[in-house]
Image 1 (tube, rainbow, N blue to C red):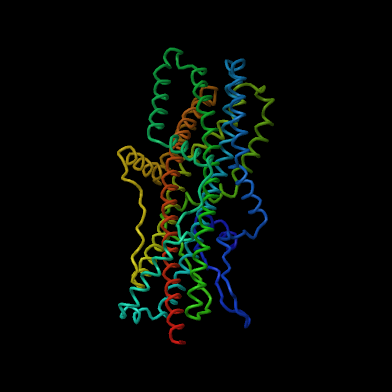
Image 2 (image 1 turned 45 degrees about the horizontal axis):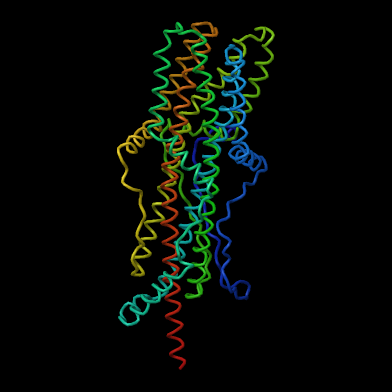
Length: 498
């Protein structure tokens, strides 16, 4: 019984993260090792085949072929709509397809976010693990003695400057492809506050014109179709930019870890240190009860349990089709279910993105603080930190809107809104109009939250790129200094021999 309770209570509790950087031994089993194992950063493979399979499916959902396939499908729908778009069934059909596609992508996006969090926290732990070794070995170099000799110190400064000016120390991380830069530009357009404003202007214009059609079911269906098509595009676009940015980040981490492992190896050669790197444990974050419930839900969604439930619901939906004579009301049922769950997931996704990003940022701030202490200990200037440009009013408004949308209270408010929509549809006995009540508002709200999700992703990605660049430059400066110390000591040894 206790084991069953533990299984149920495990989701939602963010576990501690352990990480240890691969030790760059200079000697093993009595044999000298001549060069570091600079293989870059190696993501950890998950032990269960099911998890690996799910991750593969998620990666494919963000691939370019899937993205272009969805674009082609939307174009085909728009062209066919010229002939069939006036029928209720055609409008309901796109609503159902959108709700199901969005529902599935919700699960994929949640798993993407959870995987990214685990990866970033592991990276932070491995960087902290290596910093501990750097600190231990720098203490063995006895740099204070060198600092007392002005001539030696001046010579060291010149040597370090020569290394820093060498081509291999040009502090350039891998560049994105032209297609990648284009998509990144579009992501900033879609996530701009101006796009959000245009979106809501369109919604209010639609509401204002409703009286011309008596606020009919067809009037609602037109907006439902438009928002449905928009949402399918935004989900596919968001999955693509996340997967592509994740791949870009991995290429940057490869470059950073290659320099860091070389730095560790050179320090070990200088000091004769052959001690394993320490394991670093990042404790689990403390969260409120409401946030724990949200995390519990995302853990279930991230394991794609929601998709399994959707499949069961679709079987039930098909089974009751003959009872409703496969009419428009029946067609809307599955869209209503998926739409309501999708709306809730939109609130949850924005909260998840902000919370996990905050935890990861905190750990990378610790890495930066420890790096600053290392520079202070060796008496070297800290490389000039690149920062984001002064944010204008529009960007500040976007950030404020992001914070409000990411708050756990907003998630609760969204859930209560869903209960209100269900109550309203129940009062209408789940007629076509009642079901549209549970389709149109959720579709509009979820589309808004997906655009906000792009805004949040852009902000996090911009900051992440700067952090990676600064981290890389600090590692190159460390390596230049260690190379300088090695060169200076080689010169000293040579002079003593002669």
